[in-house]
Image 1: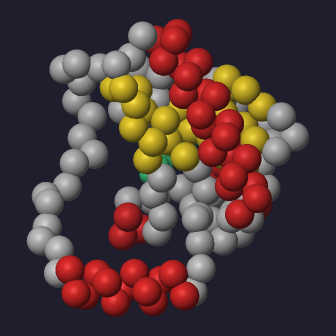
Image 2: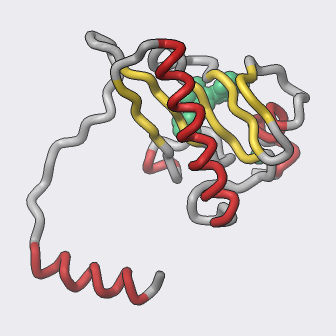
Length: 138
Ligand code: 5GP
Ligand code: ZN
């Protein structure tokens, strides 16, 4: 997708309105238009990156630091009991807006949020090989 057609670029530069919690030169934090729970918000870098596979790693670091601050403030203000941080990458993973964004989803007893998967079985030998291969490529 071209950057000019990206809805989160437009939200980041104020062309499309959003209920903004915080912004600085680098990031914008705003409420999700279709929240999974009360307080569900998104953190985006103002620079366009499609997803985790192309985001600048320094930017990602600062974004996560901001997420920790926002999470603490949300928890205080909403009195939520927990919070899921969700970050989808690629259509297969449920990404629908192809501009990097981190979901902060406050959790409450009896809410309808579902981020569970069916647990699988690990093959320990295969995991050991994979661990080495991934580590060698970091
Ligand atoms: P994804 O499925 O890509 O991880 O999440 C995209 C999120 O963006 C969804 O939760 C959706 O509700 C939210 N969203 C899509 N369009 C808009 C919009 O125009 N404004 C806001 N505030 N959120 C949006
Ligand atoms: Zn964008």
